[in-house]
Image (cartoon, rainbow, N blue to C red):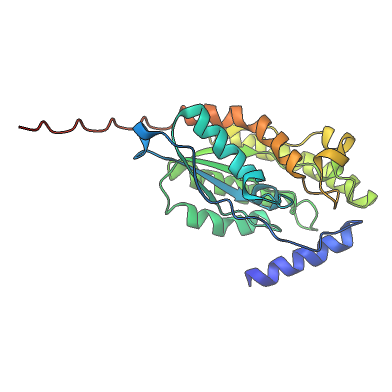
Length: 251
């Protein structure tokens, strides 16, 4: 069923875009980032949830992905190693992210980044339903102990790879959904990170990949630079790791 949903999403994108991608390969970036000998037993978990932006479609190597860039920055900023887990999948709608969250509750809580909505606004479906599902996901993660970072719905109107009517409709629908995401972040005491802006349209050749929709490696680096301060703030709300016990005295 999941594979069928991905195929349908890709077929739908072919109808909406000028140059739809043909290769959906995304490098696997899961793993540990950074090293701190005195905190080796207290890694920080970073979880990426959502759609192609959270998974980093368009990156060529693991270190170019949004998750890897954020994990590296977190490790440097906190002095703790970071365990990155990427559950996001290209083509995911808010409803599909529910399965990702079910996997998340089995992990040690840390920082969860939620980026979703771009596919919802391109589908002929009510935005209110997507917003309610998003709020449910946020509450579930917060109740499970995660420090949640919400990125409001990105605006496909800034992506020149979409056809003109799609950009116009996507802009208006994403603006509304982004407001609802922001309201959810406030009500669940989540952290709000910036989303893409008009510079991704004006500097498309540099910040977007060949399809004119998904970020290029440089675009993901730009996203990471904007988002990292929010993640570092979220890290200050995590429980302080207990100090390692002193070694037993020898006789």
